[in-house]
Length: 195
Length: 241
Image 1 (cartoon, rainbow over the protein chains, first blue to last red):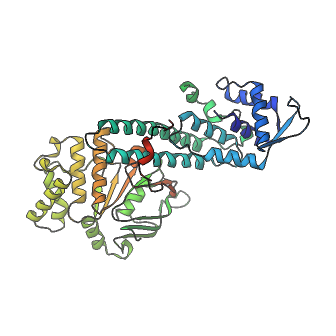
Image 2: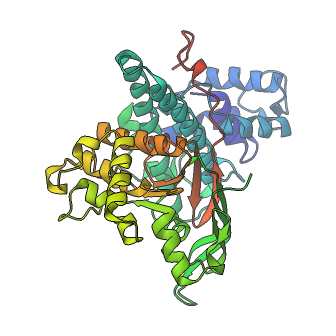
Image 3: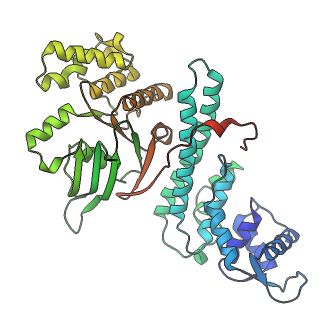
Protein backbone atom coordinates (compact mmCIF):
# COMPACT_ATOMS: atom_id res chain seq x y z
CA UNK A 1 0.00 0.00 0.00
CA UNK A 2 1.07 3.60 -0.35
CA UNK A 3 2.33 4.77 3.05
CA UNK A 4 3.15 8.12 1.42
CA UNK A 5 -0.44 8.80 0.57
CA UNK A 6 -1.84 7.45 3.83
CA UNK A 7 0.45 9.90 5.69
CA UNK A 8 -0.62 12.73 3.41
CA UNK A 9 -4.25 11.81 4.17
CA UNK A 10 -3.62 11.97 7.92
CA UNK A 11 -1.84 15.30 7.52
CA UNK A 12 -4.73 16.64 5.45
CA UNK A 13 -6.64 16.80 8.75
CA UNK A 14 -4.05 19.13 10.28
CA UNK A 15 -0.37 19.27 11.35
CA UNK A 16 0.95 16.26 13.27
CA UNK A 17 4.12 14.84 14.84
CA UNK A 18 5.89 11.83 13.36
CA UNK A 19 5.13 9.55 16.28
CA UNK A 20 1.54 10.71 16.29
CA UNK A 21 1.26 9.82 12.60
CA UNK A 22 2.56 6.31 13.31
CA UNK A 23 0.13 5.86 16.21
CA UNK A 24 -2.86 7.18 14.26
CA UNK A 25 -1.97 5.11 11.24
CA UNK A 26 -1.75 1.93 13.32
CA UNK A 27 -4.80 2.71 15.41
CA UNK A 28 -6.85 3.18 12.30
CA UNK A 29 -5.68 0.14 10.41
CA UNK A 30 -5.43 -2.25 13.38
CA UNK A 31 -2.70 -4.81 12.87
CA UNK A 32 -3.38 -5.13 9.18
CA UNK A 33 -0.74 -2.65 8.11
CA UNK A 34 1.91 -2.45 10.85
CA UNK A 35 4.32 0.42 10.38
CA UNK A 36 7.58 1.03 12.20
CA UNK A 37 8.51 4.53 13.19
CA UNK A 38 11.64 4.48 11.01
CA UNK A 39 9.44 3.90 7.98
CA UNK A 40 7.32 6.87 8.99
CA UNK A 41 10.31 9.21 9.25
CA UNK A 42 11.91 7.97 6.03
CA UNK A 43 8.64 8.52 4.22
CA UNK A 44 8.21 11.97 5.78
CA UNK A 45 11.74 12.95 4.72
CA UNK A 46 10.96 11.96 1.15
CA UNK A 47 7.67 13.81 1.24
CA UNK A 48 9.51 16.88 2.52
CA UNK A 49 12.17 16.52 -0.18
CA UNK A 50 9.38 16.43 -2.76
CA UNK A 51 7.76 19.53 -1.13
CA UNK A 52 4.59 17.64 -0.29
CA UNK A 53 4.99 18.32 3.43
CA UNK A 54 6.90 20.90 5.44
CA UNK A 55 8.16 20.79 8.99
CA UNK A 56 9.24 23.11 11.71
CA UNK A 57 11.79 22.62 14.45
CA UNK A 58 15.18 21.03 14.12
CA UNK A 59 16.74 19.54 11.01
CA UNK A 60 17.00 16.13 12.63
CA UNK A 61 13.92 13.95 12.48
CA UNK A 62 12.54 13.32 15.92
CA UNK A 63 9.38 13.06 17.96
CA UNK A 64 9.07 16.83 18.41
CA UNK A 65 9.10 17.68 14.73
CA UNK A 66 5.78 18.95 13.49
CA UNK A 67 4.71 18.16 9.92
CA UNK A 68 2.06 19.82 7.82
CA UNK A 69 0.81 19.14 4.30
CA UNK A 70 1.59 21.69 1.56
CA UNK A 71 -0.64 22.75 -1.30
CA UNK A 72 1.43 20.54 -3.57
CA UNK A 73 0.90 17.67 -1.10
CA UNK A 74 -2.87 18.14 -1.11
CA UNK A 75 -2.83 18.18 -4.87
CA UNK A 76 -0.67 15.03 -5.00
CA UNK A 77 -3.09 13.26 -2.65
CA UNK A 78 -6.10 14.28 -4.70
CA UNK A 79 -4.43 13.14 -7.92
CA UNK A 80 -3.45 9.78 -6.44
CA UNK A 81 -6.99 9.16 -5.20
CA UNK A 82 -8.37 9.65 -8.69
CA UNK A 83 -5.67 8.01 -10.75
CA UNK A 84 -6.63 4.63 -12.16
CA UNK A 85 -3.85 2.17 -12.88
CA UNK A 86 -2.83 1.47 -16.46
CA UNK A 87 -4.39 -1.93 -16.15
CA UNK A 88 -6.82 -3.35 -13.65
CA UNK A 89 -5.50 -2.46 -10.21
CA UNK A 90 -5.22 -5.04 -7.51
CA UNK A 91 -8.36 -4.84 -5.45
CA UNK A 92 -6.49 -3.69 -2.37
CA UNK A 93 -5.16 -0.57 -4.03
CA UNK A 94 -8.70 0.58 -4.67
CA UNK A 95 -9.73 -0.37 -1.14
CA UNK A 96 -6.96 1.83 0.21
CA UNK A 97 -7.90 4.73 -2.05
CA UNK A 98 -11.50 4.61 -0.91
CA UNK A 99 -10.51 4.29 2.76
CA UNK A 100 -8.07 7.18 2.47
CA UNK A 101 -10.63 9.28 0.60
CA UNK A 102 -13.04 8.88 3.53
CA UNK A 103 -10.50 10.73 5.70
CA UNK A 104 -9.68 13.56 3.35
CA UNK A 105 -11.76 16.71 3.81
CA UNK A 106 -13.52 17.93 0.70
CA UNK A 107 -13.33 14.67 -1.26
CA UNK A 108 -16.62 13.47 -2.76
CA UNK A 109 -16.08 9.75 -2.18
CA UNK A 110 -19.09 8.79 -4.24
CA UNK A 111 -17.73 10.71 -7.19
CA UNK A 112 -14.33 9.11 -6.65
CA UNK A 113 -15.92 5.64 -6.64
CA UNK A 114 -17.73 6.50 -9.86
CA UNK A 115 -14.55 7.62 -11.61
CA UNK A 116 -12.90 4.29 -10.77
CA UNK A 117 -16.05 2.38 -11.74
CA UNK A 118 -16.10 4.11 -15.13
CA UNK A 119 -12.45 3.33 -15.73
CA UNK A 120 -12.94 -0.36 -14.84
CA UNK A 121 -15.97 -0.65 -17.13
CA UNK A 122 -14.02 0.98 -19.96
CA UNK A 123 -11.33 -1.66 -19.45
CA UNK A 124 -14.00 -4.35 -19.37
CA UNK A 125 -15.45 -3.04 -22.64
CA UNK A 126 -12.05 -3.51 -24.24
CA UNK A 127 -11.80 -7.13 -23.06
CA UNK A 128 -15.37 -7.78 -24.17
CA UNK A 129 -14.51 -6.35 -27.60
CA UNK A 130 -11.44 -8.61 -27.68
CA UNK A 131 -13.70 -11.58 -26.97
CA UNK A 132 -16.25 -10.45 -29.53
CA UNK A 133 -13.60 -10.14 -32.23
CA UNK A 134 -11.84 -13.40 -31.33
CA UNK A 135 -12.09 -16.15 -33.89
CA UNK A 136 -14.72 -18.69 -32.90
CA UNK A 137 -12.09 -21.37 -32.43
CA UNK A 138 -9.71 -19.19 -30.42
CA UNK A 139 -10.65 -20.68 -27.09
CA UNK A 140 -7.46 -19.51 -25.35
CA UNK A 141 -8.09 -15.84 -26.13
CA UNK A 142 -11.71 -16.12 -25.06
CA UNK A 143 -10.70 -17.71 -21.76
CA UNK A 144 -8.07 -15.04 -21.08
CA UNK A 145 -10.59 -12.28 -21.82
CA UNK A 146 -13.16 -13.98 -19.58
CA UNK A 147 -10.65 -14.22 -16.73
CA UNK A 148 -9.99 -10.47 -16.87
CA UNK A 149 -13.67 -9.66 -17.25
CA UNK A 150 -14.62 -11.69 -14.16
CA UNK A 151 -11.80 -10.13 -12.15
CA UNK A 152 -12.85 -6.62 -13.18
CA UNK A 153 -16.46 -7.53 -12.40
CA UNK A 154 -15.57 -8.49 -8.82
CA UNK A 155 -13.85 -5.13 -8.28
CA UNK A 156 -16.81 -3.25 -9.77
CA UNK A 157 -19.18 -5.16 -7.49
CA UNK A 158 -17.07 -4.15 -4.50
CA UNK A 159 -17.28 -0.52 -5.64
CA UNK A 160 -21.05 -0.84 -6.04
CA UNK A 161 -21.45 -2.18 -2.52
CA UNK A 162 -19.06 0.43 -1.13
CA UNK A 163 -21.13 3.10 -2.85
CA UNK A 164 -24.36 1.72 -1.39
CA UNK A 165 -22.85 1.63 2.12
CA UNK A 166 -21.55 5.18 1.75
CA UNK A 167 -25.00 6.35 0.76
CA UNK A 168 -26.51 4.79 3.88
CA UNK A 169 -23.92 5.96 6.37
CA UNK A 170 -24.82 8.84 8.65
CA UNK A 171 -23.15 12.10 7.73
CA UNK A 172 -20.05 12.76 9.81
CA UNK A 173 -16.93 14.81 9.50
CA UNK A 174 -13.68 12.97 8.86
CA UNK A 175 -12.50 13.85 12.37
CA UNK A 176 -15.46 12.04 13.87
CA UNK A 177 -14.49 8.86 12.12
CA UNK A 178 -12.62 6.63 14.49
CA UNK A 179 -10.56 4.71 11.97
CA UNK A 180 -9.29 5.01 8.45
CA UNK A 181 -12.25 2.82 7.59
CA UNK A 182 -15.20 3.93 9.67
CA UNK A 183 -17.78 2.01 7.67
CA UNK A 184 -15.68 -1.11 7.40
CA UNK A 185 -14.73 -1.15 11.06
CA UNK A 186 -18.35 -1.45 12.14
CA UNK A 187 -19.11 -4.15 9.57
CA UNK A 188 -17.97 -7.78 9.65
CA UNK A 189 -14.62 -6.49 8.36
CA UNK A 190 -14.67 -7.87 4.84
CA UNK A 191 -11.43 -6.18 3.74
CA UNK A 192 -9.47 -7.72 6.55
CA UNK A 193 -10.93 -11.15 6.03
CA UNK A 194 -9.66 -11.08 2.47
CA UNK A 195 -6.08 -10.52 3.40
CA UNK B 1 -25.34 14.15 -35.07
CA UNK B 2 -29.03 13.76 -34.35
CA UNK B 3 -29.87 10.54 -32.60
CA UNK B 4 -32.49 8.11 -33.71
CA UNK B 5 -33.60 8.47 -30.12
CA UNK B 6 -33.35 11.88 -28.45
CA UNK B 7 -34.24 12.63 -24.85
CA UNK B 8 -34.15 16.35 -24.17
CA UNK B 9 -34.29 17.58 -20.59
CA UNK B 10 -36.59 14.71 -19.68
CA UNK B 11 -37.88 14.66 -16.11
CA UNK B 12 -40.33 12.33 -14.45
CA UNK B 13 -42.02 12.93 -11.13
CA UNK B 14 -44.25 10.36 -9.46
CA UNK B 15 -46.77 11.32 -6.79
CA UNK B 16 -47.51 14.77 -5.46
CA UNK B 17 -45.75 17.06 -3.00
CA UNK B 18 -44.62 16.53 -0.29
CA UNK B 19 -44.18 12.85 -1.19
CA UNK B 20 -43.21 13.28 -4.81
CA UNK B 21 -40.44 11.11 -6.19
CA UNK B 22 -38.15 12.52 -8.86
CA UNK B 23 -37.33 9.45 -10.94
CA UNK B 24 -35.60 11.42 -13.72
CA UNK B 25 -34.17 14.92 -13.60
CA UNK B 26 -33.45 16.83 -16.82
CA UNK B 27 -31.93 13.88 -18.65
CA UNK B 28 -30.36 14.48 -22.06
CA UNK B 29 -29.52 11.42 -24.12
CA UNK B 30 -28.95 10.91 -27.81
CA UNK B 31 -28.58 7.46 -29.36
CA UNK B 32 -27.77 7.33 -33.08
CA UNK B 33 -28.68 4.40 -35.31
CA UNK B 34 -26.05 1.70 -34.99
CA UNK B 35 -25.15 2.44 -31.37
CA UNK B 36 -25.87 0.22 -28.38
CA UNK B 37 -26.01 2.18 -25.14
CA UNK B 38 -26.13 0.59 -21.69
CA UNK B 39 -27.78 2.48 -18.85
CA UNK B 40 -26.31 1.51 -15.49
CA UNK B 41 -27.24 2.59 -12.02
CA UNK B 42 -28.30 1.28 -8.63
CA UNK B 43 -31.91 0.38 -7.86
CA UNK B 44 -34.06 3.50 -7.84
CA UNK B 45 -31.68 5.48 -10.04
CA UNK B 46 -34.35 5.89 -12.73
CA UNK B 47 -33.04 3.52 -15.39
CA UNK B 48 -36.25 1.57 -15.95
CA UNK B 49 -38.24 4.82 -16.02
CA UNK B 50 -35.88 6.13 -18.68
CA UNK B 51 -36.55 3.02 -20.78
CA UNK B 52 -40.33 3.18 -20.49
CA UNK B 53 -40.33 6.87 -21.38
CA UNK B 54 -38.00 6.27 -24.34
CA UNK B 55 -40.43 3.57 -25.50
CA UNK B 56 -43.48 5.82 -25.07
CA UNK B 57 -44.94 3.41 -22.52
CA UNK B 58 -45.01 6.32 -20.10
CA UNK B 59 -45.04 10.09 -20.56
CA UNK B 60 -42.40 12.40 -19.11
CA UNK B 61 -43.45 15.10 -16.63
CA UNK B 62 -41.26 17.55 -18.55
CA UNK B 63 -38.97 17.50 -21.55
CA UNK B 64 -39.20 16.00 -24.98
CA UNK B 65 -38.66 12.54 -26.50
CA UNK B 66 -38.01 12.22 -30.23
CA UNK B 67 -37.78 9.00 -32.19
CA UNK B 68 -36.63 9.25 -35.77
CA UNK B 69 -37.08 13.02 -35.59
CA UNK B 70 -40.70 12.92 -34.41
CA UNK B 71 -41.60 14.22 -30.97
CA UNK B 72 -43.98 12.00 -28.99
CA UNK B 73 -45.66 15.09 -27.55
CA UNK B 74 -46.85 16.24 -30.98
CA UNK B 75 -48.29 12.86 -31.93
CA UNK B 76 -51.85 11.70 -31.47
CA UNK B 77 -52.47 8.70 -29.25
CA UNK B 78 -52.92 6.53 -32.36
CA UNK B 79 -49.72 7.76 -33.95
CA UNK B 80 -47.83 6.97 -30.78
CA UNK B 81 -49.30 3.47 -30.70
CA UNK B 82 -48.29 3.01 -34.34
CA UNK B 83 -44.79 4.21 -33.55
CA UNK B 84 -44.60 1.66 -30.74
CA UNK B 85 -45.76 -1.15 -33.01
CA UNK B 86 -43.66 -0.28 -36.05
CA UNK B 87 -40.52 1.40 -34.90
CA UNK B 88 -39.80 0.29 -31.36
CA UNK B 89 -38.93 -3.21 -30.18
CA UNK B 90 -38.94 -4.26 -26.53
CA UNK B 91 -37.03 -7.07 -24.87
CA UNK B 92 -37.97 -8.01 -21.32
CA UNK B 93 -36.22 -10.11 -18.71
CA UNK B 94 -39.01 -12.71 -18.73
CA UNK B 95 -39.28 -12.87 -22.55
CA UNK B 96 -43.09 -12.30 -22.64
CA UNK B 97 -43.69 -14.82 -25.42
CA UNK B 98 -47.28 -16.02 -25.91
CA UNK B 99 -47.49 -19.70 -24.92
CA UNK B 100 -50.13 -20.61 -27.52
CA UNK B 101 -48.10 -19.39 -30.50
CA UNK B 102 -44.99 -20.98 -31.93
CA UNK B 103 -41.76 -19.02 -32.36
CA UNK B 104 -42.40 -17.56 -35.81
CA UNK B 105 -46.02 -16.72 -34.89
CA UNK B 106 -44.74 -14.86 -31.82
CA UNK B 107 -42.19 -12.99 -33.92
CA UNK B 108 -44.64 -12.02 -36.66
CA UNK B 109 -47.47 -11.08 -34.28
CA UNK B 110 -46.51 -7.36 -34.00
CA UNK B 111 -46.66 -7.04 -37.79
CA UNK B 112 -50.02 -8.79 -37.97
CA UNK B 113 -51.36 -6.49 -35.26
CA UNK B 114 -50.17 -3.63 -37.43
CA UNK B 115 -52.25 -4.84 -40.36
CA UNK B 116 -49.61 -6.70 -42.36
CA UNK B 117 -51.04 -9.79 -44.09
CA UNK B 118 -50.36 -13.16 -42.45
CA UNK B 119 -48.13 -14.38 -45.27
CA UNK B 120 -45.96 -11.27 -45.40
CA UNK B 121 -45.78 -11.11 -41.61
CA UNK B 122 -44.70 -14.73 -41.44
CA UNK B 123 -42.02 -14.17 -44.08
CA UNK B 124 -40.67 -11.20 -42.13
CA UNK B 125 -40.78 -13.28 -38.94
CA UNK B 126 -38.74 -16.03 -40.55
CA UNK B 127 -36.28 -13.48 -41.85
CA UNK B 128 -35.82 -12.05 -38.35
CA UNK B 129 -35.26 -15.54 -36.93
CA UNK B 130 -32.74 -16.22 -39.68
CA UNK B 131 -30.93 -12.97 -38.95
CA UNK B 132 -30.52 -14.14 -35.38
CA UNK B 133 -29.44 -17.61 -36.45
CA UNK B 134 -32.43 -19.34 -34.88
CA UNK B 135 -34.56 -20.13 -37.93
CA UNK B 136 -34.62 -23.79 -36.89
CA UNK B 137 -36.72 -22.83 -33.86
CA UNK B 138 -39.54 -21.38 -35.97
CA UNK B 139 -42.08 -24.16 -35.39
CA UNK B 140 -41.33 -24.70 -31.72
CA UNK B 141 -43.58 -23.42 -28.94
CA UNK B 142 -42.17 -21.42 -26.01
CA UNK B 143 -42.37 -24.39 -23.62
CA UNK B 144 -40.23 -26.36 -26.05
CA UNK B 145 -37.47 -23.75 -25.94
CA UNK B 146 -34.68 -23.21 -23.41
CA UNK B 147 -34.39 -19.84 -21.67
CA UNK B 148 -31.64 -18.74 -24.06
CA UNK B 149 -33.68 -19.78 -27.09
CA UNK B 150 -36.76 -17.98 -25.81
CA UNK B 151 -34.80 -14.77 -25.42
CA UNK B 152 -33.41 -15.11 -28.95
CA UNK B 153 -36.95 -15.46 -30.25
CA UNK B 154 -37.98 -12.45 -28.15
CA UNK B 155 -35.15 -10.41 -29.71
CA UNK B 156 -36.26 -11.52 -33.19
CA UNK B 157 -39.74 -10.24 -32.29
CA UNK B 158 -38.22 -6.94 -31.16
CA UNK B 159 -36.39 -6.37 -34.45
CA UNK B 160 -38.94 -7.83 -36.89
CA UNK B 161 -39.97 -5.61 -39.78
CA UNK B 162 -38.42 -2.19 -39.88
CA UNK B 163 -37.84 -1.57 -36.18
CA UNK B 164 -35.34 1.18 -35.58
CA UNK B 165 -35.18 1.34 -31.80
CA UNK B 166 -34.51 -1.63 -29.53
CA UNK B 167 -35.18 -1.27 -25.80
CA UNK B 168 -34.11 -4.02 -23.42
CA UNK B 169 -34.63 -4.22 -19.66
CA UNK B 170 -32.19 -6.66 -18.00
CA UNK B 171 -32.50 -8.97 -21.01
CA UNK B 172 -30.14 -11.62 -19.68
CA UNK B 173 -31.36 -11.62 -16.08
CA UNK B 174 -32.69 -15.16 -16.08
CA UNK B 175 -29.96 -16.69 -18.22
CA UNK B 176 -26.63 -18.32 -17.45
CA UNK B 177 -23.47 -16.52 -18.49
CA UNK B 178 -23.01 -18.27 -21.87
CA UNK B 179 -26.64 -17.69 -22.90
CA UNK B 180 -26.50 -14.15 -21.56
CA UNK B 181 -23.47 -13.51 -23.72
CA UNK B 182 -25.23 -14.95 -26.76
CA UNK B 183 -28.12 -12.54 -26.17
CA UNK B 184 -25.74 -9.58 -25.96
CA UNK B 185 -24.02 -10.66 -29.19
CA UNK B 186 -27.42 -10.63 -30.87
CA UNK B 187 -28.31 -7.19 -29.54
CA UNK B 188 -24.98 -5.89 -30.82
CA UNK B 189 -25.52 -7.53 -34.18
CA UNK B 190 -28.94 -5.89 -34.41
CA UNK B 191 -27.40 -2.50 -33.67
CA UNK B 192 -24.66 -3.04 -36.22
CA UNK B 193 -27.45 -3.52 -38.74
CA UNK B 194 -28.60 0.04 -38.10
CA UNK B 195 -30.84 -0.20 -35.04
CA UNK B 196 -30.37 2.14 -32.07
CA UNK B 197 -30.34 0.11 -28.86
CA UNK B 198 -30.64 0.77 -25.15
CA UNK B 199 -30.00 -1.89 -22.53
CA UNK B 200 -30.84 -1.16 -18.93
CA UNK B 201 -28.86 -3.18 -16.44
CA UNK B 202 -27.04 -3.19 -13.13
CA UNK B 203 -24.64 -5.84 -14.45
CA UNK B 204 -21.24 -4.51 -15.55
CA UNK B 205 -20.47 -7.54 -17.72
CA UNK B 206 -23.67 -7.02 -19.64
CA UNK B 207 -23.04 -3.29 -19.94
CA UNK B 208 -19.55 -3.93 -21.29
CA UNK B 209 -21.08 -5.18 -24.54
CA UNK B 210 -22.40 -1.69 -25.22
CA UNK B 211 -20.61 0.95 -27.29
CA UNK B 212 -21.25 3.42 -24.50
CA UNK B 213 -22.24 3.07 -20.86
CA UNK B 214 -24.27 5.89 -19.30
CA UNK B 215 -24.43 6.07 -15.51
CA UNK B 216 -27.60 7.20 -13.77
CA UNK B 217 -27.81 8.20 -10.15
CA UNK B 218 -30.85 9.64 -8.39
CA UNK B 219 -32.41 10.42 -11.77
CA UNK B 220 -29.37 12.29 -13.10
CA UNK B 221 -26.94 11.22 -15.79
CA UNK B 222 -23.73 11.50 -13.77
CA UNK B 223 -21.14 10.01 -16.08
CA UNK B 224 -20.52 8.01 -19.23
CA UNK B 225 -17.72 5.94 -20.71
CA UNK B 226 -15.44 7.23 -23.43
CA UNK B 227 -15.41 5.39 -26.75
CA UNK B 228 -13.26 2.26 -26.31
CA UNK B 229 -9.75 2.72 -27.78
CA UNK B 230 -9.67 -0.84 -29.07
CA UNK B 231 -8.21 -4.00 -27.58
CA UNK B 232 -4.76 -3.81 -29.23
CA UNK B 233 -2.72 -2.99 -26.14
CA UNK B 234 -4.50 -5.29 -23.72
CA UNK B 235 -2.45 -8.44 -24.01
CA UNK B 236 1.08 -7.14 -24.21
CA UNK B 237 3.63 -9.27 -22.38
CA UNK B 238 4.55 -6.39 -20.07
CA UNK B 239 1.01 -6.12 -18.80
CA UNK B 240 0.89 -5.41 -15.07
CA UNK B 241 -1.78 -7.26 -13.18
